[in-house]
Image 1 (cartoon, rainbow, N blue to C red):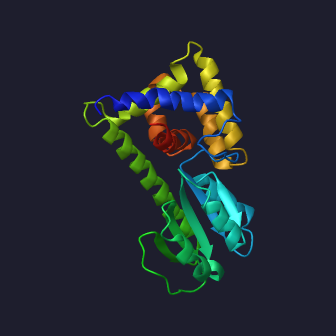
Image 2: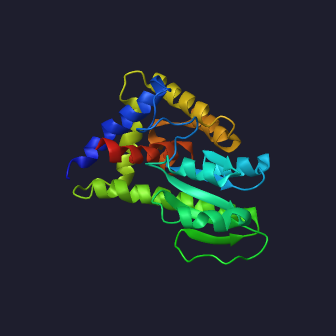
Image 3: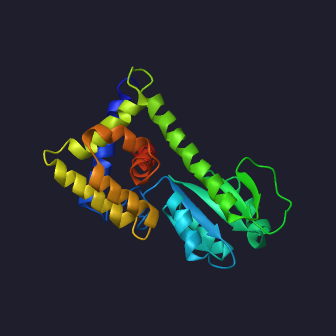
Length: 247
C-alpha cells in the first residue's frame, strides 16, 4: 500500500493521454457518449423537456445531462451505468412509479423531487427532498458536486496514507505528469484543452473556464487548478472510477 499512490500517476496520465490522442476510445469498460467525462451524471426525468436555461445551469454543475420523459427508457439507461454516480431529478408525475425501482441502486448518488406541492416520500439518505424551485435544486446539487470532490480527495489521501505525501501534492504530481511528462509540454497542454473543448461543447460556463485556463495556466498553479471545481478537477476525479476496473 505504501507505494500504491505511485500507480495512480501513470494510470491517470495514460488515461487522459489516451483521450487526447485517441478521442474515440471509451473512458471505461463500456462505450460512452460525448461529454460523459465526469464521475457524476445528471438525469432529468420529467413529462416536459426543460428550458435551455435550465439545461445550461445543470451542465454548469454536471456536464453530462440525460433528459427522459419515459420511465422505462430512464431505468434502461441507469442499468447501463457502472463506475459513475447519478444525480436524479424526478417530477412528481413519475415519482411514485420509479422511486422503489431506483432508490437502492448503488449508482444512485442523490434524488431530487420537483413538485409544486409537498408529496409523501420514503425515508432514505439519497432523497434530498421535495423542491418547488429549481434554484434550490441547483444549490443542493452544487453541494453534491463538492461532496463528491471531497470524496475523491479522501480516496487519493487513503491511497497515500502510508506515506507523508499530502493529497495536494498527489494532485500536483498527477496534473504535472499529464502536462509535463512528455518533452513537448505545449503539445500536451494543447491536447488537454482540445479534449476539454470537445467534451464540454455547448457548456457555456465550462468553456469560459477552459478559455481562462488556456490563457493563464502556469506550472506553479497546478494545485490551484485542481482544487477549483471546474472541468480539470472533474475530469481528473473521473479517473478514479477507472481504477476500480484497472487496479
